[in-house]
Length: 130
Image (cartoon, rainbow, N blue to C red; front, side):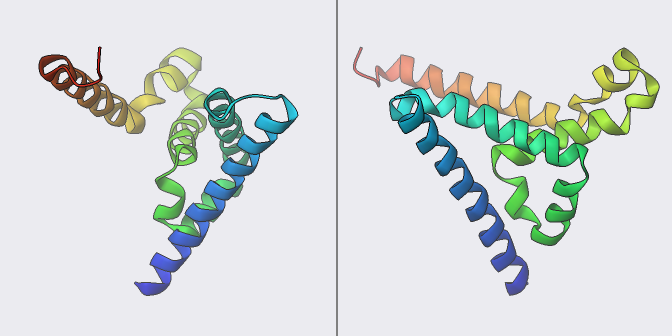
């Protein structure tokens, strides 16, 4: 169990280091602020994850690292891409479109519901200073 935790920590940390490097590249290469570099950094991490999933590399890393690859945004992209690849033979609409969100759908629903309730609390209690 300790070895699994160490592998998850190392791979999750490596993904975070890569993300930080991409963010720094956007800040220095394109003269973006830290806030402005956030969205393109996430998009690049998602793209890298999807490409690695399509090549079969991400799943091998995930088998070795466990939860270290599942927690970051790359794990979410991998779960959606894997489902799309698995059902592509059934067609774009009934295969990819219908099955892509099976695993990720619950994450999206709970994220939206949680955001709604947090926003409601902020609104009711006037948190945020407006």
